[in-house]
Length: 576
Ligand code: FES
Image 1 (cartoon, rainbow, N blue to C red):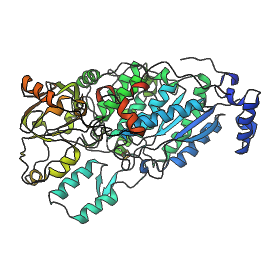
Image 2: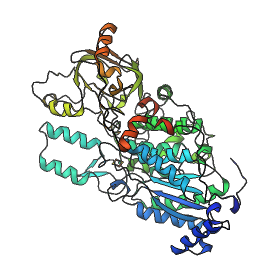
Image 3: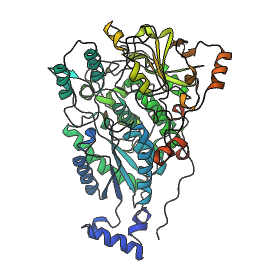
């Protein structure tokens, strides 16, 4: 980390504002047009506030106000704030899946930062894919950057019971399908489950990825756990604005922070949180942007030594609001000194270890001590075998333990529509021992690898009391979901992975302790099926979809675009 401070002439924005030519006249006169006097910006760092606010993103409803609070901090510290709206990836509304657009937001972020006179940036995100997208773009551009997490929403409420985003939707939906609750009850859940600004407050992808960003050193200490509605969240926004200005003068860039130590710390934090399986895809993509080696095997190795300490749904009992009151991520990380690299750098200029000094846990039931973990290890597990040669993942704490070793006959669906049409057919030959297989749900097949991986349990089995069974797909699963769902099977079926070759009745063996996933069909028969397999037609022939299908990588490589992974930095634009 450098201690030399930049001079105003060394600012990147100086090339736009500070030189004496016709172009810079244009930049200054147009800034004056917006009501700013030269003294407002001359010689000051220009701070982009990349804001993913949108009228259709409920998780970011407070971002208009928070952007003002970030600006207040930037002004106070002697910077010039410039708010830049960026595509909002609204998890509940965007179809077929926000994952299709993660790389588009990453590209937009990178290009916004490159093409404008930006010296440093505050990245405002939190709803699921917004966090990895913003960080991926910032890593590729490599300016000073701080991530400002949206913060979780308050607990949901239904007749005095706490409701968790997603998890309780699945739970009450199953009860409705089983005939155990009324339509009126269901309406009550609808009205109370999301009652405040902020992202999902279970340990879904949002809480997982904002916490990963903090563990990686990219937020102010403690930022990711503060509920959006808490006044301390607004204070954090202002402090973020203040700090980014100094980061510019110190020339502390995002790749000075995200190195192998930071990535391992993020993976360890995700595991100790019982975090979403989606983090695997996102962290691999993000690490590859920073040229840090990270593969599925590393996740599995760290999972074997990392206990799940956060007792948060869906793996545990509580919600993010409880987690904050119990000490938040700093409290949790302070319980893992032997598993973290305390020397890793962070945005405030101190090491992770220095930032954890004095952190405490106020409720041992929410953040468990090391000698009483929620799960001793294996918060995530990576499976391989002839059904997933390049890997698949499962979340053991979120499944019924009896299914960890299971062999059963496949019931195969060729697509989501096929599954939706037949899953509740009373004549479907399915039992509690069956293994439900969904094909065509991967990065290219769906496309965009949607969160379809928590395949529904057939209604007739729900009525018999079945609440979990082995399900396999090349899809992802919402971090708020649960069940014995094998996900991210790679290579996916759409490109001819072995998942495409499974037929009804084939025996499939899942063995989580041995990390195996096997299709018990002999090699000669599989070869015959492979020879007869025909690649499906591409799902898009024009536009962004066509670009996506041409360049997206498989799940084990992070589903980034191949041309966006690490490479020579793109030069700054000429200013003519
Ligand atoms: Fe935005 Fe869940 S819907 S984080």
